Length: 227
Image (cartoon, rainbow, N blue to C red):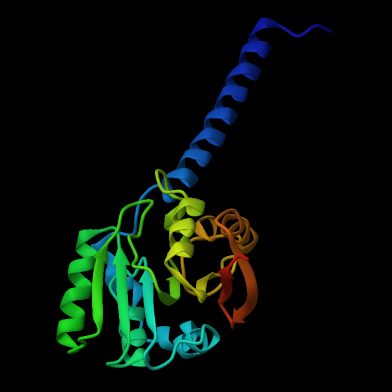
């Protein structure tokens, strides 16, 4: 029995509908990663239990951040980690808090003034150049790497700049949420693949020197300058 023209048209309409749904799904996923974190939602980044699951002391210990260290907080947002770095390095150290959104820089300035921290300097970077000074003991990228994948930003370009800012024995630490849907953090489609981070860092001339789990929700990758 042959297939009539009406049946063919119904099949074509169904196929077009399926393709449209699929394309909308892809567009929605892309859109979710197409914009920076809105400054007006900064409060969402600082839940009361963040200190418990973020484990800042474990992260700073792993990077060897101590009194007198000169460090940078890349994609610092509202400065939650910045103030913890400032307390760790003390008055003999220095923290550069970098972000590419002026509203975030303003929020950090207000925060460090409120907390009377004189060892923090803010930097308004660009999409592909954090404009960090040279001679840093450590650079931290905490829960911000996925924004460095939003065009026109390019992770390898940014990490190349970071590598140039490190001392010969300096370290880069990238902290982000494990893949999946558990715990706090962004939607599953916005979470980064650690292996993808390693590849971008390698392209920037950085070598993976350690990999840690910041249990239960996050991972920490530590990189050093290549030989």
